[in-house]
Length: 294
Image 1 (spheres, rainbow, N blue to C red):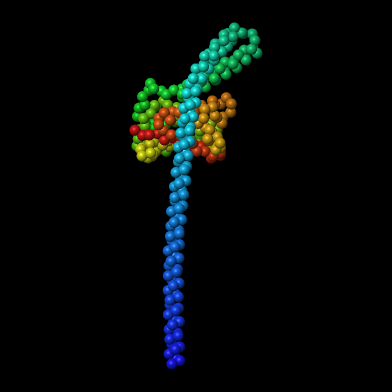
Image 2: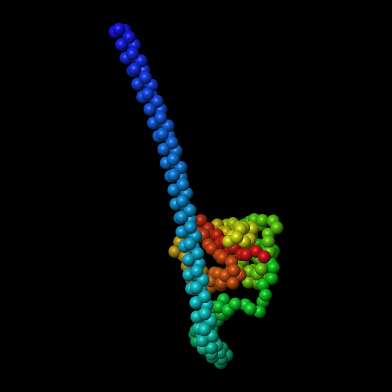
């Protein structure tokens, strides 16, 4: 009897142990499932946060572009009116200064000051002319299909020898069979030349200028993306936010009017395109232009 009780007790302990092991195994499986679920939920949450952050950044960029467009349009309208008011008295000043220069022959000191007046008057006239040019749309010329690569090559051909003398290497990266872009050739060349000349100034005596063009899909339509990059001194974030504003320049006084990129922005906007810049101090600058393909 006692032996049977011992056997029954041992059997009961074995069953309890088996049950305990089963419960532990079930618990481990449950923990594994919960862990996998937690990992998957964390990944989904992370992806959702990234998507939301990206959407917020895109919204901020779009809002900044709208603000910039309105700001530039208002400045353009204002400058058109002001420019005409400035040119009239400026022409009178220039005329009288020229008359005095013709009369005075024996007063070098006075001639020196009169020449200063003439030079500054010409500088003002140049600025006013630039403002007038960007403030009015060119309605006389009809945009025509343009090969972006051909226009880039025509501008590079103008500067390539000069840049080689200054130890600036030009690299090309053009995607084959680029679609055409409807544009005004003269204005598009003006944009490219301005950006390329700015790149040269930023690199001083040596560096690499990279010009690329590729087809992209943007806003559910085909676009041509042009990038102009330099290995120059770069810009701070504060300067980067102001580069398309009129009269803003990082160049020394007398080296620039601060209207070049303002005009470039206006031209690209008239072509229903976008332009953006990326830069960091000491890391060079990249301008990216997107133009709708034909």
